[in-house]
Length: 248
Image (cartoon, rainbow, N blue to C red; front, side, top):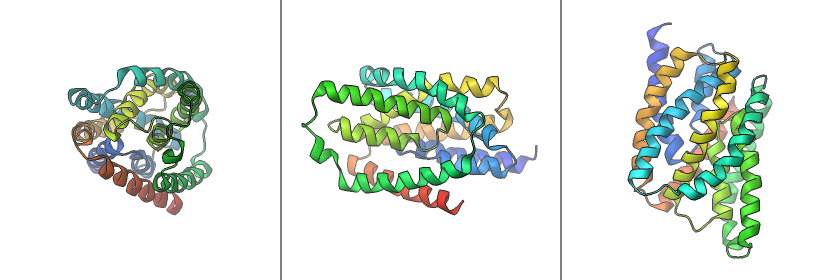
């Protein structure tokens, strides 16, 4: 393997690791990059997950250190997401990216509109807590299937769900929950890709090293940045990655 692709993957890993933690969607950069360097789509998908696991471990340390990990809610939501992610990963072994990328980009634009409109303002306090819990459970089943299948942009689904159904949680805490849930379910579902030999370990090592640095930095700054700034970063990231997908 030539050294230039490895260095490029390492550098992008730093950026992606940071974006994934303070916002979401960094995998929209890594997947096209890995494919550009010759990896089949499903191998790029599996390889990317190794780096996400590593970056999230470093980010979780920072969230825990800053007191932004809601263990009770995070673990509760991780259970349905993890079980569903195994099914999603099984689908992903033979998934085609083209059509799905276009659909994902469309959903991202819709999410931007929802984030600007802030539908939680009209829902807050009007949903029975028990009903909200059921909706959260069902939403994280769908999130688990999607995360297990593609992963890219799953943070958008998680943040939007929390904004609508648990709006009182600060953004930094939401990112902590997002990171915890993804860490748990991806640690399990990635074994489906490993079992099917869909991981390029050389690229995975380079991407993991960069993502670890980016994830550590992201966890540190996501804990101290103002909620409004984090929401703006989220909106900008969604628009940016949606445009990338449409261009592809």
